Image (tube, rainbow, N blue to C red; front, side, top):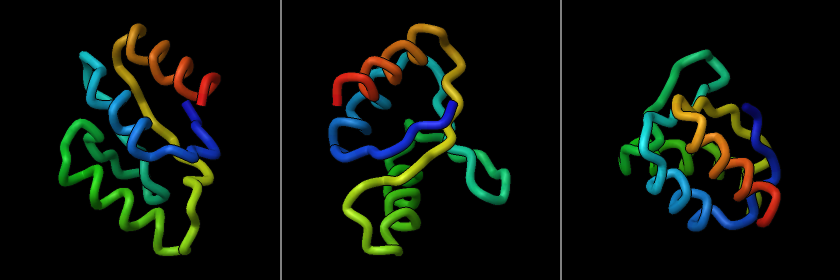
Length: 79
C-alpha cells in the first residue's frame, strides 16, 4: 500500500510499533526494510528527510496482517 503526506512521524511509528505482524518499507530500489526495527525506522527517516521536508511525501509499505493494514489505513484517514 502507498501512504502519503505523513505529517506526524512519531504517531506513524507508534502505529507501526503497535502492529502484530511484519511491516516493511519498500525502497525505491525494491529493497524491503523491517519497519518494526528501530534501526530501520531511523535509517528510513534519515533517507526521507535528506530533502529537508517536514512531511513524508510518500511511502510504499507492506503489512502482512489484515488488522495491521486496517490500523495503518485508520491512521491515514484520521491524521
